[in-house]
Every structure is written in C-alpha cells, then in structure tokens.
Amino acid sequence: MRLGGSDPHTLAGAYAMDAVPEPDRSRFERHLARCESCRQEVRGLREATAALAGATAVQPPAALRDAVLHAAGQTRQMPPAVAPAPVAWVPTQQRRRPRWRPRLAVALAGALAAVAVAAGLVTYGMQGRLDQARHRDHMVAAVLSASDATMASRHVSTGGTATVVMSHRERALVFTAADLHVLPTGESYELWLISPAGTRPAGMIDGAGHGKMIGPMVVSGLAAGDSVGLTVEPTSGSPRPTSPPLMLINL
Amino acid sequence: MTEGQRRSPGGPSGRPGQPPAGAGRRHARSGPGPDQLGALLGRVARGDQDAYAAVYDRTAGQVLGLVRSIVRDPAQSEEVTQEVLLDVWRSASRFDAELGSAAAWVMTLAHRRAVDRVRSEQKAAEREMRVASSAVAYDEVAEAVEARLDRERVRRCLGSLTELQRESVTLAYYGGYTYREVAGLLGVAIGTVKTRMRDGLIRLRDCLGVDL
Image 1 (cartoon, rainbow over the protein chains, first blue to last red):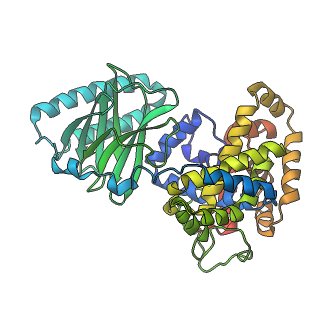
Image 2: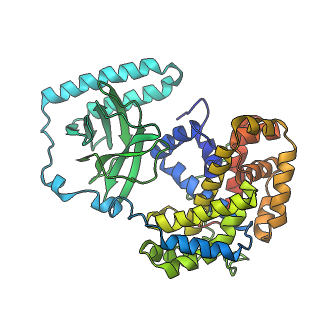
Image 3: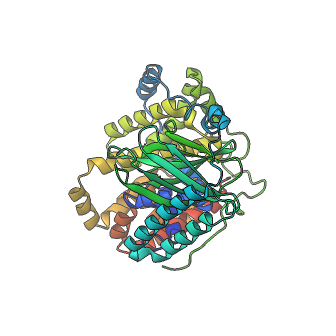
C-alpha cells in the first residue's frame, strides 16, 4: 500500500513526535485507521518519546501548582468518551429491528450500479494512484459479488443517506453515502466499526454536500457482531469517537 | 531511502523481567508493575481532586521540562504547562490504558500543545528563515536538552543512535520541528529524515525496553 509515492509506514516515527503537519497528517491518519500494525507501532514509539520527555524534567514553581489545582477545581470535566464508549454504543433499540432487507435482487442491483459508477469515476480521477484504486475496486467487486452480500440503508440524523453492502465471508463492507450535510472547516465525518470489544476507526470521509455521492469506501477486517457508525470528528481524525453517532447500522 | 528496518510490531520489544536501572525513580513510566499513574487518572476522571494533586506532582516537572524545551519562553511555557495539566483534569475520562501508558498519554498531550503553540506563533516566514539559517538550531536544541538530560538511561540510549538518527529525533521531539523542517535544518533528503526518525525511535524504544 502506497501513499504519496512512498511507503506510509516510514511516517510513523515523525507522526509519533507530532512532526507531520497537515495535509500529510490527515492522510497518514487515514492510513492508520486501516492499519492495526501501524497503530501498534505508533503506540510503542510514543512510549519511547514519553521516556525522552522524562529526561527533561525540571522543578516547577510552587505558584504553578496552586494555580493549576485551583483552576481544576473550577473546570468542568469531560464525560467519558461517548457515554460508556464502545459497548453502550450498540444501542439496544436499534438492535430490536434489524432492518436488513433480505437480499432483494433489485435493491442490490441498484446499489451495485451506483457503486460501480462511483468506483469508475474515482478510479478515473486518481491516475497517480492506480494501484491503490485497482486494489480497492477489486475489493469492492469482491464484496458486492459475495454470495452472502447484504445491503442496508439508513438516514443520517443530520441529513443524507448512508448505504452499506457487506459480506461476512469477505470480512468487509462497502460504504457509500449521499447528500451528507456539509460540515464546517476543521470537521469531517468519520466511520467506525463498533463491537462490544472496542471501537475501531474505519476511515475519514471527504466530500460531503447536497447531491454529492461519497465512496465507495471499503472497510475490511469486519468481525461478527460489528456495527458500523458515523460521527463528526476533527478533520485530523480521532482515535475514538468523540460525539454521538449520526447513523448506526448493526451488521 | 535505505533499509526499512521493518519489525513486526508488538514483537520482541518487551523483554522478560527487565526492571530498568532507573525503575525506582519518581518518574511514572511504563515500567513493569501496575501503572499507578493510570490508576490515579481513573480517580481523577471521577472528579477526585486529591488524586489530581498526586497526578500533578508526578507529571508537572516533566510536562514543564518538555514544554520549555520546545517553547523556550519561560512565561509562555508555564502557560502551556497549565493548559496541558488542565487538559489532563478535563479529559482524564478519555485516557484508555489499552492504548498506552498514562505517562505516554500525558506527555503526548504536552508535546502536542507545545508544538501547536510554536507553530501557531511563529509566522511561516519567520520559521522558514530559521530553517534556512540552519546549523545554529541543532546546537541550540541539543545544548538545551543536554543540560537537562539528567537521566543516564535516556542519555545512553540516545548515544546509541547514529548521528543522523539522533539529530532527527532531537530536533523533532525536543525542538518541535516538522520532518520537512528537520530535513531543511540538516540538509538531507526528506525521505531520509522520515526513515531516520522512525528507525531512530525504534532503536530508542528497544534500548529503553519500553513495555507495550
């Protein structure tokens, strides 16, 4: 997998030291979202940098302590990440009515057509990254043609529709969305895979807007019991969701 | 770009039973044994002010030291330190022990805040000039850091890096420079700097015996 013409893994060191400015930073974070081994490497390197930090310790002035403790006493704390993060994230009322349509041939054919068109357009626009696009197209095709492919659509609470075609056999899903509400600068949609065991970032989403189609994005590494959710996050991405889901689909 | 030094992450970095030489120090680090700082953060998340005072006592010196090495100006450094420590209070509930040690979490907050401060303060032009005027910066940063490198282990491990690895890591981490700026300062290719930062940190991680 290549990024901007060079192996993205090499950015892990710079990233762990906050030495990657935008837009490389967002790009690398998108890569991180898909790469468990990279996330682990960044974690390890951050531990090393923490030891570096320890080496510079100085004696802070006593007045600082008073000021900080006083200020803390007057500062409201943040609630735990998105109301008990990952587990409570799979709300039971949603679970009650799994609106998975049985594989309606017509609906699926429609999704296939839409996705295929989008895939074509995206491929066309990314001449420099043909390999990546080809790989992606291949994955899209694999999911869509899987014998166990199923589809679900949901309204996004702030506007627009999200559609997912997924295959447990391929352990992957294809995500598309349309008419998503345009976000202020600095904010982006982020996709998540949610399971009782934890929440994994599944990619940042660019190009929201009325009449605009997003994707197809391939999310791999699907596990049994996963849900897919959408939140609004800072454009640089978040390691965990920091806002309530705008859309949630139990897979 | 040269050797990738690819390692399987989560690989043999945690050597069995290796209490590091400096384990007895006050520094909360990701050494063996329970992560006391992490436990304190759990209490802070529930609004425990005594626990917060204990977290302050364990981290404020490191936070201030790191922020100062990046920001330099003493008054601004204290300001940033105060922001960082308040961040710790506000967002303690977001600390997730599965994603790393409490010390790393705090120092990551500190480093990011400090870097944000210098990057927003320094106008791009001014910064470019500094990058162009090369040489001075590394010596400056290195001197300032060396003066405070009181911990033998870190010094020894930094010493085990190649010169280019050490310069790249030092400028990025203690200097708060971006990798492009570091490449400019050192007069080497961007790709080389990225690689040196990564393999330098990997070597440090292994030398320090960081648990993960």
